[in-house]
Image (tube, rainbow, N blue to C red; front, side, top):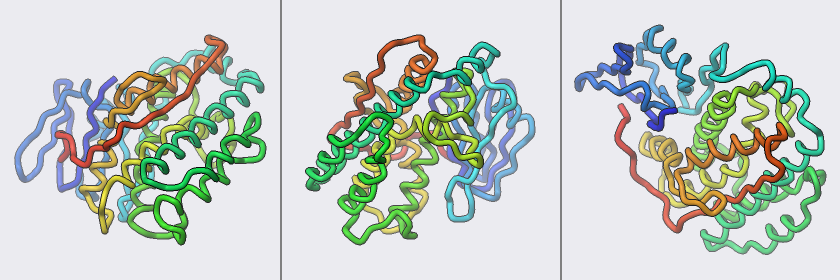
Length: 301
């Protein structure tokens, strides 16, 4: 599986030749090995993309993500055939035991709130109320402490009058970063051969990515941490590039330092193994380093 995230942000012609992504712009021609690519984010309406390139991406499970005119991701490619799906895996998924689904969702909600508390603390915010909510979590989070914490958490980070429903640069950045994280999670699910539609908590008929929406939760605070670490007055291309590169932030997952992208992949695999009975225990612990990157990696057009 590749590691590079490619952003297409200007007029370009994108083709595929000899296992290479070929990007032709006014500045010249760039060639990128297909095996190096994890995802391609197209944020311009002036990109011409060949069907051969799209086919090569689908065969390799490379996500191609498209944005709207406000630069918010609105869709991603999903192939007919995942990389490793077989009937036995699907049967397991349909029969995941209720107790395991509930126990895993409890761990996920707990880990997410723990990480939110860490982000708030690193930003100098009082966290006692959040800690009280964390202690009140029950099995399957039946009292929805996760939602209660969210209502208290974001105003701590962005100001007491802040709401996730407002249209501003911070909400635009959060939504964009979460969409990139969801794509990474979905990619890991299909890499392991499972359906994205069957969630363990989210059960929205209109959501093709219920399972990804469930499993991504402990890593949302990685995006929150990146956004709170930046100073920006508008949601511009530099911010978008930084959010894609946030997947290369070094964090600690269950005590081991690794790139966020790699942590998501390992975590998704462990969750799926737990749900399918291939492991009896699962730990979910996400920790942050004291600094987050504000630069862009090479590989964007």
